[in-house]
Image (cartoon, rainbow, N blue to C red; front, side, top):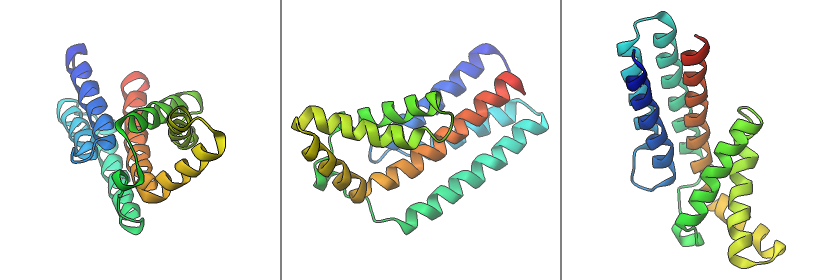
Length: 160
């Protein structure tokens, strides 16, 4: 696979990551489709193994999501700015502390957005708890699964 094709696969994966944060956009499906596209072009066993692993991770994330409360983020006062901060925090946390850093990064991003919006620490903590209870954990589950797949894909491309 050429550099331009790999770049297009990466762009589709990043669109999928953004799609997780935007309601109505099938983010996990875009990430999976990008891995499928890469696996069809790269006929090595590693690519097919990553496709199977991505499928298992996304199915497990869906199973976990079904056990969580439904998304009601708009009713809790969630904004696009909060989603952007949460996504950026998860991505930053994923890079700083590989894999597990996405979780505190996501929650920290929500807290930062709420702190900027509300001004006080206590109000921001309460708003963060409300956002996480009203669907934030569902979004975090999907985002974490997609980040895990993206990280595995980057590892396979650079070191595989």
